[in-house]
Image 1 (tube, rainbow, N blue to C red):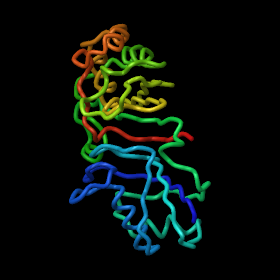
Image 2 (image 1 turned 45 degrees about the vertical axis):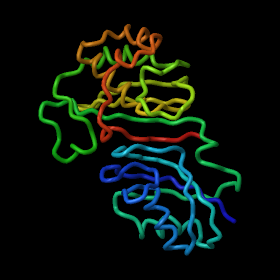
Image 3 (image 1 turned 135 degrees about the horizontal axis):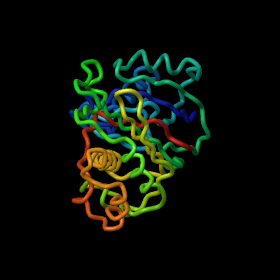
Image 4 (image 1 turned 180 degrees about the vertical axis):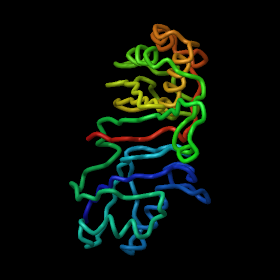
Length: 244
């Protein structure tokens, strides 16, 4: 029995998230069906974690077990031939039989992209969040530093999360300005439901002058969701990298 690890890129638009669900388009099910068509086997795909409806991935990871003898160097091409163009398997490697993409995960990197121009983009409108009002990037950078470290992020999660603890560690929090676009990049041990989108919404409020950078510390300590910013739309969010 072979254990295969995949690195997957996808445009989340048009999918109801990663997780397999009956009668709803999902990424996990699309890839499992593609693998079944080329191997003749029903497989279970184990991802590093779920992404929500509309969220994109540059390098999601997932693994599955198979008895197929398809050479590893031909596996990506074979799977991709059976997939929608909005999903691409970028890399396939054979890993130890005990490896599990979720349980062996050490951390993740997410990116939220904001188009901070007056008119926005016709081409990238479904791949970034358009914010018409000019944001103060320096203030956003100042505020981002308060998220780094081990904190209880209860103020930055949506209701409905299944996690027992809201304590997480953020390794880095960066705000990068590239022309008319602002990228918020967070790496950490793990993230709560909608945590990155809420942190991004809070940093937008800082950029708009609604929240002072130093107030982030109090929002974290008070654990009050109503004091943090809104949850930004899913289409601006990307899972960039998973660490093992």
